Structures are given as structure tokens and as C-alpha cells.
Length: 61
Image: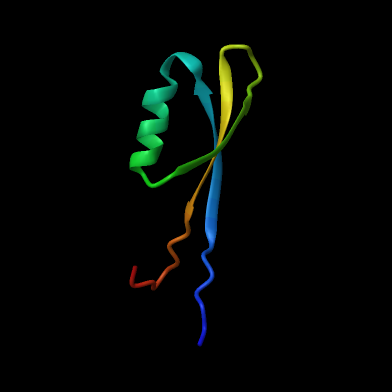
């Protein structure tokens, strides 16, 4: 019996604190899950690390 291993794709994006909820909701609607928020290059921004399951070519999902 073989188990399917989930493969992931990742990306990072700047998250401006004054519109964070809107940005996170938009990414969530596209299937991205927030993994972590880290301090950004300036005090008003954060960096979001996101992941979602990788859809491989030829997959029936």
C-alpha cells in the first residue's frame, strides 16, 4: 500500500501592516497558507512566508 507524499510550493511576499488582513485574505483565496510572518525591511512592513500543495502536470486533482 503506497501513500501519496504531499509536495509543496512556497513563496514570500511583503505584507504592509495597514492592509495585512486584505492581503492575507487574497492569498488565502488563492489557496496559499500563511506559514510565518517575519519583520520586513522597514517598520511598517512584514514578510509573509506561504505554502500550498503543488499541483503537478497531469494530476487529476
